[in-house]
Length: 221
Image (cartoon, rainbow, N blue to C red; front, top):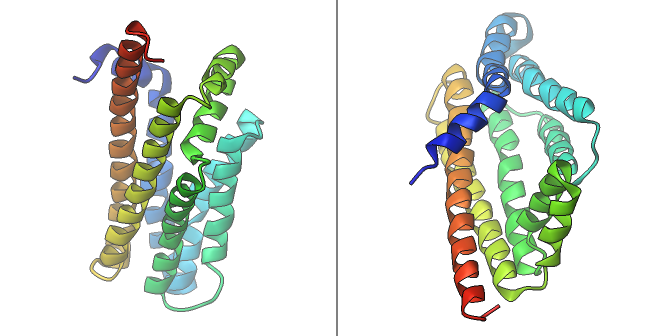
């Protein structure tokens, strides 16, 4: 069951930021492409349309002024997105190359789980450190617990698979929809994927915590 009180608290605290991010990532690219396509052409318009979300990400990074696993992850995504515009080609392939960033990040998630260094652990620890250093230390203390590592690995695998599915769906949509339609639908698919993965992560973490409490209650560690 969804914790309605907690959801409302999150919306009160982050609602304005979520709204601004939605405008930047949904409306911004569509408007910029529509205004610049005539002068710059389809490819030039697409490159220009990427400016709002990239600028927003850089502004957020500069505002928070933190260099941690999450920040590095965001900056790496921006760098990869910029590289996606290099190499020429038509607008469809430009959109497809940009979505390959999502696929590459998904592969990184899966690879980190395979080598025993699940990326979710490092991202979660960085998030905990921003909120409360003491909480981050408690979180890190569980690193060698086999049950904890299993949870982190499962989360990382699911996120990696989810991002690859998102990239695959978007790849089909690139060649199915018009360019302007994809500028609206593409981000919606991405946000739906992230939202679904986030909700699953929240549920799975609560389930793992309950099971952990049950194990400790019977002395199982």
